[in-house]
Image (cartoon, rainbow, N blue to C red; front, side, top):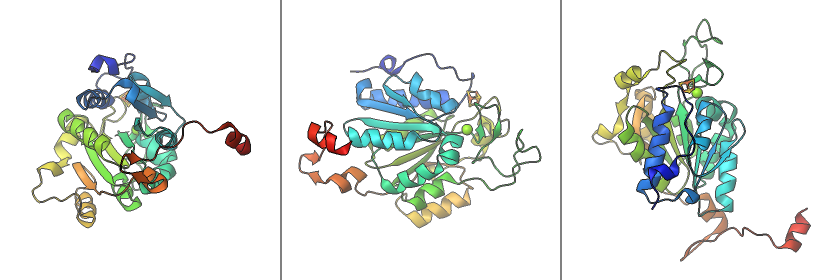
Amino acid sequence: MATMADFRYDKATWCPGCGDFSVLAALQQVCVKIGLEPEDVCCVSGIGCSGKISQHFGSYGFHSLHGRSLPTAQGIKMANQDLTVIAAGGDGDGYGIGVGHFIHACRRNVDITYIVMDNHIYGLTTGQSSPTSKKGFKTKTSPKGVAEEPIKPLELAIVSGASFVAQAFSGDLKQLQRLIEEGIRHKGFSLINVFSPCVTFNRVNTYEWFKENIVNFDEQEGYDPTNKAQALAKIAETESVCTGILYREDRPAFHEVVLGATEQGTVKVPLEIPNDEMQSLI
Ligand code: SF4
Ligand code: MG
């Protein structure tokens, strides 16, 4: 049985206090808790500070291109459905250059878990406004304040067809672990957007700011995450500063639709293509 040490690879190089440490720790703890071995998991990341997670996490890994963690992760899952596939990245990577892939991953419903470390800024490139920066936020690239409305990843995921949408906070490790576990157990595409403060370049959306502003839907009586209209209304009410499982829906995952399912489980994609078939493909 694997331990936390088995899921460690190298020493994380994030700034002390960066929210991404909690995401890495939560992912390691969940993998141990649900009995996965490092060879059962593949972590695919994009580019940015958060993208380093695939090299700090001890499993199969793929540090992909900017904004391209999702197509890579979906391809890996379709080729080997026995793997637990985690895609990970930041708000700039996933909701900027990668937003087209994000929308299609939501509607496609491949059985992977997508963890976005959302700090509302580009951290690796030293502090420019990102797609989730709030309007008016001053950075090097927006000295008079961001002029655009921010991307709303939760609403975008829900209206694009995501079957599991949750939001967590690096300052609440217990809830973060639970949501990652639920996301991995969910059959289909799961988004876990994590408020993961950049302590070096974002002096507005700090741990304290999130603690003061977050509305935890786990504590809201009568909240039903299977009610899409209610989910959209409640998320809008909190201006997306909420945590918990916000929306979930049971529907067949992409491989079940495309490949069919048997009583023994899903039909597997053949990993080896016969030579004559391969020749005809070339
Ligand atoms: Fe984390 Fe920000 Fe440092 Fe990057 S620059 S490691 S996001 S604290
Ligand atoms: Mg970012």
